[in-house]
Amino acid sequence: MSGGGESSAHSQDLARVRVSYDAVADRYVEEIHDELRNKPLDRALLTAFADQVQAEHGAGARVCDMGCGPGHVGAFLAGHGCTVTGLDLSPVMVARARSLHPEMTFEVGSMTALDAPAGCWDGIVAFYSIIHLTTDADVRAALAEFHRTLSARGLLLLAVHLGEDRDATVHSDEMLGVSVDMDFRFFDADLLAAAIAAAGFSIEARLVRAPYEGAEVQTTRAYLLARRSPDDRLGVGETAASVET
Image (cartoon, rainbow, N blue to C red; front, top):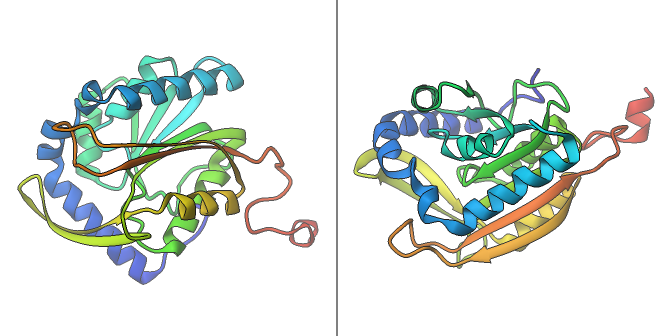
Protein backbone atom coordinates (compact mmCIF):
# COMPACT_ATOMS: atom_id res chain seq x y z
CA MET A 1 0.00 0.00 0.00
CA SER A 2 1.21 3.43 -0.85
CA GLY A 3 2.03 6.12 1.64
CA GLY A 4 0.70 8.96 -0.53
CA GLY A 5 0.16 10.45 -3.98
CA GLU A 6 2.45 12.42 -6.23
CA SER A 7 2.00 15.88 -7.75
CA SER A 8 1.82 16.42 -11.49
CA ALA A 9 5.19 18.23 -11.55
CA HIS A 10 6.81 15.47 -9.52
CA SER A 11 5.30 12.83 -11.81
CA GLN A 12 6.83 14.60 -14.81
CA ASP A 13 10.23 14.67 -13.11
CA LEU A 14 9.93 10.96 -12.31
CA ALA A 15 9.04 10.22 -15.93
CA ARG A 16 12.15 12.04 -17.16
CA VAL A 17 14.36 10.14 -14.71
CA ARG A 18 12.73 6.82 -15.59
CA VAL A 19 13.14 7.29 -19.33
CA SER A 20 16.73 8.47 -18.88
CA TYR A 21 17.79 5.47 -16.83
CA ASP A 22 15.98 3.11 -19.19
CA ALA A 23 18.10 4.58 -21.98
CA VAL A 24 21.42 4.48 -20.12
CA ALA A 25 20.90 1.12 -18.37
CA ASP A 26 23.29 -0.96 -20.46
CA ARG A 27 26.12 1.57 -20.28
CA TYR A 28 25.42 2.03 -16.59
CA VAL A 29 25.81 -1.70 -15.96
CA GLU A 30 29.12 -1.68 -17.84
CA GLU A 31 30.54 1.24 -15.86
CA ILE A 32 28.93 0.99 -12.42
CA HIS A 33 28.08 -2.61 -11.59
CA ASP A 34 31.57 -3.46 -10.33
CA GLU A 35 32.31 -0.07 -8.75
CA LEU A 36 32.45 -1.29 -5.14
CA ARG A 37 35.69 -3.16 -5.74
CA ASN A 38 37.39 0.23 -6.08
CA LYS A 39 35.67 1.80 -3.06
CA PRO A 40 37.00 0.31 0.19
CA LEU A 41 35.22 2.76 2.47
CA ASP A 42 31.86 2.11 0.84
CA ARG A 43 32.39 -1.63 1.29
CA ALA A 44 33.33 -1.12 4.93
CA LEU A 45 30.23 0.97 5.63
CA LEU A 46 27.94 -1.52 3.90
CA THR A 47 29.53 -4.39 5.81
CA ALA A 48 29.06 -2.56 9.09
CA PHE A 49 25.44 -1.82 8.16
CA ALA A 50 24.76 -5.49 7.35
CA ASP A 51 26.38 -6.59 10.61
CA GLN A 52 24.47 -4.07 12.71
CA VAL A 53 21.04 -4.62 11.19
CA GLN A 54 21.37 -8.38 11.65
CA ALA A 55 22.72 -8.07 15.19
CA GLU A 56 19.61 -6.06 16.06
CA HIS A 57 16.95 -7.73 13.90
CA GLY A 58 18.27 -11.25 13.42
CA ALA A 59 20.07 -13.17 10.71
CA GLY A 60 18.63 -12.51 7.29
CA ALA A 61 17.26 -9.11 8.36
CA ARG A 62 15.02 -7.53 5.72
CA VAL A 63 16.72 -4.72 3.81
CA CYS A 64 15.63 -2.58 0.86
CA ASP A 65 18.22 -1.34 -1.62
CA MET A 66 16.38 1.85 -2.54
CA GLY A 67 17.17 3.04 -6.06
CA CYS A 68 19.06 -0.18 -6.65
CA GLY A 69 20.19 0.33 -10.25
CA PRO A 70 21.78 -2.92 -11.47
CA GLY A 71 21.65 -4.39 -7.95
CA HIS A 72 25.32 -4.36 -6.96
CA VAL A 73 24.83 -2.70 -3.57
CA GLY A 74 21.98 -5.04 -2.69
CA ALA A 75 24.02 -8.04 -3.83
CA PHE A 76 26.86 -6.96 -1.54
CA LEU A 77 24.44 -6.80 1.42
CA ALA A 78 22.92 -10.16 0.47
CA GLY A 79 26.42 -11.59 0.41
CA HIS A 80 26.71 -10.51 4.03
CA GLY A 81 23.56 -12.32 5.09
CA CYS A 82 20.76 -9.79 4.60
CA THR A 83 17.50 -10.60 2.82
CA VAL A 84 17.43 -7.85 0.21
CA THR A 85 14.75 -6.37 -2.01
CA GLY A 86 15.95 -3.98 -4.68
CA LEU A 87 13.68 -1.18 -5.85
CA ASP A 88 14.23 1.16 -8.78
CA LEU A 89 12.20 3.61 -10.84
CA SER A 90 13.54 2.24 -14.14
CA PRO A 91 11.94 -0.98 -15.48
CA VAL A 92 14.94 -1.58 -17.75
CA MET A 93 17.36 -1.20 -14.85
CA VAL A 94 15.28 -3.63 -12.79
CA ALA A 95 15.35 -6.12 -15.67
CA ARG A 96 19.15 -5.86 -15.81
CA ALA A 97 19.37 -6.34 -12.03
CA ARG A 98 17.18 -9.45 -12.19
CA SER A 99 19.38 -10.89 -14.93
CA LEU A 100 22.59 -10.17 -13.02
CA HIS A 101 21.26 -11.35 -9.65
CA PRO A 102 18.51 -13.93 -10.26
CA GLU A 103 18.64 -15.08 -6.65
CA MET A 104 17.39 -11.69 -5.44
CA THR A 105 14.06 -9.85 -5.58
CA PHE A 106 13.76 -6.61 -7.55
CA GLU A 107 10.73 -4.38 -8.02
CA VAL A 108 9.83 -1.25 -9.98
CA GLY A 109 8.65 1.63 -7.83
CA SER A 110 9.03 5.19 -6.60
CA MET A 111 10.63 5.93 -3.24
CA THR A 112 8.28 8.86 -2.70
CA ALA A 113 5.19 6.59 -2.84
CA LEU A 114 6.21 3.06 -1.93
CA ASP A 115 3.90 0.15 -2.67
CA ALA A 116 4.95 -1.55 0.56
CA PRO A 117 3.34 -2.09 3.98
CA ALA A 118 4.40 -0.25 7.11
CA GLY A 119 7.34 -1.75 8.97
CA CYS A 120 8.22 -4.23 6.23
CA TRP A 121 11.98 -3.62 6.31
CA ASP A 122 14.57 -3.63 9.08
CA GLY A 123 16.99 -1.54 7.06
CA ILE A 124 17.04 0.74 4.03
CA VAL A 125 20.13 1.65 2.03
CA ALA A 126 19.87 4.51 -0.45
CA PHE A 127 23.27 4.91 -2.11
CA TYR A 128 23.19 7.98 -4.37
CA SER A 129 19.53 7.39 -5.16
CA ILE A 130 17.91 10.47 -3.60
CA ILE A 131 20.04 12.71 -5.81
CA HIS A 132 17.16 13.15 -8.27
CA LEU A 133 14.83 14.49 -5.56
CA THR A 134 15.44 18.11 -6.40
CA THR A 135 12.84 19.74 -4.16
CA ASP A 136 12.64 19.73 -0.38
CA ALA A 137 9.08 18.41 -0.66
CA ASP A 138 10.31 15.38 -2.60
CA VAL A 139 13.03 14.69 -0.04
CA ARG A 140 10.50 14.95 2.80
CA ALA A 141 8.16 12.57 0.95
CA ALA A 142 10.89 9.98 0.49
CA LEU A 143 12.07 10.22 4.10
CA ALA A 144 8.48 9.87 5.31
CA GLU A 145 8.13 6.70 3.24
CA PHE A 146 11.44 5.36 4.56
CA HIS A 147 10.19 6.00 8.10
CA ARG A 148 6.81 4.36 7.40
CA THR A 149 8.26 1.20 5.86
CA LEU A 150 11.01 0.65 8.45
CA SER A 151 10.40 -1.46 11.52
CA ALA A 152 10.81 0.05 14.98
CA ARG A 153 14.46 1.13 15.40
CA GLY A 154 15.15 0.20 11.79
CA LEU A 155 18.32 1.60 10.21
CA LEU A 156 18.71 3.96 7.26
CA LEU A 157 22.01 4.46 5.43
CA LEU A 158 22.14 7.29 2.89
CA ALA A 159 24.95 8.29 0.54
CA VAL A 160 24.87 11.56 -1.43
CA HIS A 161 27.07 13.94 -3.36
CA LEU A 162 27.92 17.20 -1.62
CA GLY A 163 28.00 20.56 -3.40
CA GLU A 164 29.95 23.74 -2.82
CA ASP A 165 26.66 25.67 -3.04
CA ARG A 166 24.02 24.72 -0.51
CA ASP A 167 21.69 22.21 -2.15
CA ALA A 168 22.71 23.02 -5.73
CA THR A 169 20.85 21.35 -8.60
CA VAL A 170 22.28 20.80 -12.07
CA HIS A 171 20.72 19.53 -15.27
CA SER A 172 22.31 16.85 -17.43
CA ASP A 173 21.52 15.93 -21.02
CA GLU A 174 24.29 13.34 -21.25
CA MET A 175 25.38 10.43 -19.06
CA LEU A 176 28.04 7.87 -19.97
CA GLY A 177 27.76 8.96 -23.60
CA VAL A 178 23.97 8.48 -23.71
CA SER A 179 21.42 11.27 -24.11
CA VAL A 180 19.39 11.82 -20.93
CA ASP A 181 17.12 14.49 -19.48
CA MET A 182 17.29 14.74 -15.70
CA ASP A 183 18.43 16.84 -12.79
CA PHE A 184 20.95 16.00 -10.08
CA ARG A 185 21.02 17.44 -6.58
CA PHE A 186 24.24 18.12 -4.67
CA PHE A 187 23.27 18.15 -1.02
CA ASP A 188 24.29 20.21 1.96
CA ALA A 189 25.06 17.66 4.70
CA ASP A 190 23.69 19.80 7.53
CA LEU A 191 20.41 20.49 5.75
CA LEU A 192 20.00 16.82 4.87
CA ALA A 193 20.72 15.75 8.45
CA ALA A 194 18.09 18.22 9.67
CA ALA A 195 15.53 16.81 7.22
CA ILE A 196 16.30 13.26 8.36
CA ALA A 197 15.84 14.24 11.99
CA ALA A 198 12.58 16.06 11.19
CA ALA A 199 11.28 12.88 9.53
CA GLY A 200 11.52 10.98 12.81
CA PHE A 201 15.05 9.59 12.73
CA SER A 202 18.02 10.00 15.02
CA ILE A 203 21.40 10.46 13.33
CA GLU A 204 23.91 7.91 14.62
CA ALA A 205 26.85 8.60 12.30
CA ARG A 206 28.01 11.08 9.66
CA LEU A 207 31.03 10.73 7.44
CA VAL A 208 32.44 12.76 4.55
CA ARG A 209 35.09 11.52 2.14
CA ALA A 210 36.98 12.81 -0.87
CA PRO A 211 36.38 11.04 -4.20
CA TYR A 212 38.47 8.08 -5.28
CA GLU A 213 40.58 9.35 -8.16
CA GLY A 214 39.91 7.48 -11.37
CA ALA A 215 37.17 5.33 -9.83
CA GLU A 216 34.17 7.66 -9.80
CA VAL A 217 32.84 11.14 -10.53
CA GLN A 218 35.07 13.57 -8.65
CA THR A 219 32.60 14.83 -6.05
CA THR A 220 32.81 14.86 -2.28
CA ARG A 221 30.60 12.18 -0.71
CA ALA A 222 28.60 12.12 2.51
CA TYR A 223 27.19 9.12 4.36
CA LEU A 224 24.54 9.35 7.07
CA LEU A 225 23.40 6.48 9.28
CA ALA A 226 20.10 7.08 11.04
CA ARG A 227 17.67 5.11 13.20
CA ARG A 228 13.89 5.17 13.06
CA SER A 229 12.16 6.26 16.22
CA PRO A 230 11.10 3.25 18.31
CA ASP A 231 7.73 4.90 19.00
CA ASP A 232 5.27 3.05 16.76
CA ARG A 233 2.23 4.83 18.11
CA LEU A 234 2.65 7.92 15.95
CA GLY A 235 3.60 8.15 12.30
CA VAL A 236 5.46 11.08 10.82
CA GLY A 237 3.11 14.04 10.52
CA GLU A 238 0.51 12.55 12.88
CA THR A 239 -0.54 13.93 16.23
CA ALA A 240 -1.99 12.22 19.25
CA ALA A 241 -5.36 13.78 18.43
CA SER A 242 -5.36 12.39 14.88
CA VAL A 243 -4.53 8.90 16.13
CA GLU A 244 -7.26 8.98 18.75
CA THR A 245 -9.88 9.93 16.19
